[in-house]
Amino acid sequence: MTNDFYKTLGVAETASAEEIKKTFRALAKKYHPDRNKGKKEAEDRFKEISEAYDTLSDPKKKSEYDMMRQYGPIGSQPGQSPFGGFRQSGPGGTRFEFHTSGEGFENFQDIFSQIFSGSQSGTRRRKRSDFQEEESEHPRGQDVQSEISISFMEASKGASRLIQLPDGKKIRVKIPAGIEDAGKIRLAGQGQPGIFSNEPGDLIITVRVMTDQNFERKGNDVYTSVIIPFTDAILGTKVNVKTLSKTVSLSVPPGTQPGAKLRLKGQGLSVGDSQGDLFVEIKVEIPKELTPEQKKFLEKWEK
Image 1: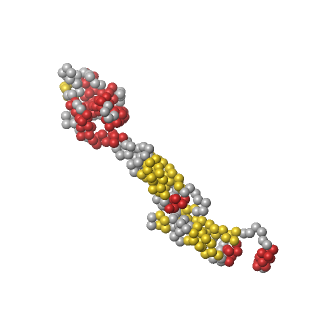
Image 2: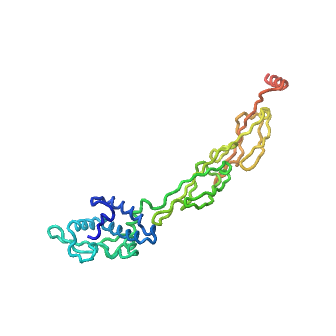
Image 3: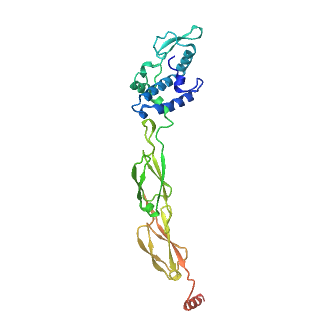
C-alpha cells in the first residue's frame, strides 16, 4: 500500500470519528493553500490529508478501507494507486469494491472541487456545507476588547479618540454625547482576522467616564450644588450656577431650607429624544463667629 491514511492524518486505527475530524481540521488550517501561498510542499500535504479524510470520515469507505488494509489489495496494476478504484476479496471469498476520488486530486483546482463542490467520480460528494460545518467552531475572527477613559464633560457633549487597531492601523473613534460609564462602542470588522478568509471579528471599546468635582449624573439628570449665606436663604437671593454649557442666574426663594433642590429644566443631558434637567442643591453657610450686633439681633429675633 503506497499510502496509509491513518499515518497521513496521524491518528490511531481506533480513533473516533470526532478525533479524526478534529485532527483533520487542525491539519487543514496548517497546510491550507491560502495560508501557504507558493509553497508546493504544503499544497501536496493538503491534498494528502484531504484525500485521507475523504475516506476516513465516511463510515462505508472507512470500513472498506480497513478491510483492504487487513487483507491487502488484489488485482491492482503495478504503479496504480490502490485507492483509485479496484476489487478486493473479503472473508469467505466475498468480493467488494472500494472507490475514492483518485482523479479528483490531480491538481490544486481539483482539491477545491472535491471539498467545495463535490467530486463526480467518488461514491460520496463532499459539499461546501460539509466543509463549513467543520469550520463552524470558528466562523469569524475573534472580537478584540479595548478600554478608553474620558472626562464627564466629554461624555456629556461627545468626543473622539485616536486608537490603534490590532494590525497597527490607527483610526479615530467617535464617542456619542450622553454615553454612560462602562458604555460600549462596537466597530464592526476591526477585530482579529478570520481563518480561511472568513469575516474578521469586531473591536469592542468600553468607555470609562471619570468623576467630576462639580457634577454628578443620575440617568439623564445632572446634579450640582451652590453655597449661600444663611441670610440669603432666609431673605431670598439670586445666584450664578454653572450648567453643562453655560452660566445661568437662579432665583432662590425666601425661606429656602438647607439641602433643598431647585430644578433648571432642560439643562441636563440630551440623549436621543430624551432631555434631562439640572438639579441645584442649596447648601447654607452658617457663620462660625458673629459680631456683637449680629448676635444681639438674633437674640432679639428669637424672642
